[in-house]
Amino acid sequence: MRHTLFELIRNFGDFLKHHLRKDNPKLPYILIVLVALIIVIAGVNVFIELTESLKEDVLAQYDQQISEYVVSFRSPVLTDYFTFITHVGDVYGYVIVLAVAALATVLYFKNWKYVLQTIFVMLMSSISNVLLKRIVNRSRPDAAHLVVVETLSYPSGHAMGAMAFYGFLIYLTYRFKVNPFLKTVLILLFLTMILSIGISRIYLGVHFPSDIAGGYIAGLIWVFFCILLFNLGEVFRRDPKT
Image (cartoon, rainbow, N blue to C red):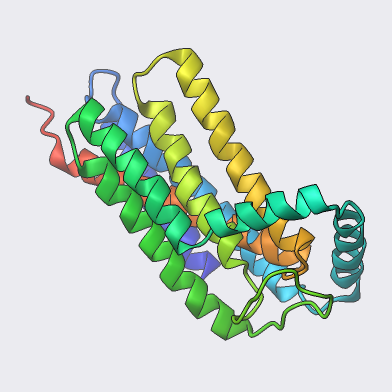
């Protein structure tokens, strides 16, 4: 698999030699594709390494220590907050957030493209998460669960979905031409949601920290893989003569 990925990089390098000209209107998209490809390859390798080490004692010790540290902060206020946040990271939460984002995008940019792209990222993330859970087949932690869970543990669907959804929104927000202050606020809000949803799963006792890490990595892979696809589409769609 790694040989195939490196072969892909070499072929892409040959492609760049013929297209990296400052006057080429495709250049911004090509550079984004290159960066996304590097991150996807690095992410896949890190995810594989993490998955292969799930049964090692060292990782189990880190999982236990981090879980005990997070759980030590349990309080009625935090429990209410993280229970709410974890529900925001469920299907209905994303439907509501996506509806708001879709309304804002259509009203401001008059274009459904970004909404459809976000839905595509989420669908790919959700489908792959179900498949990965069944392949890895890792059980949930034995600690008391503060919320009801019915699926397997690795990688965390909440963490993966949060990274895929809010991570892609961060990418779109960064590219949008909006007020710098508003852009900064939105990006910080999306980052907070990603971190809060991940931490909530450890706090509520339904995931190991390594489940969250695996979910974050897998979600990030999908974000940049889709960025790669969408920008490749722009590269081949745009005519340099226009």
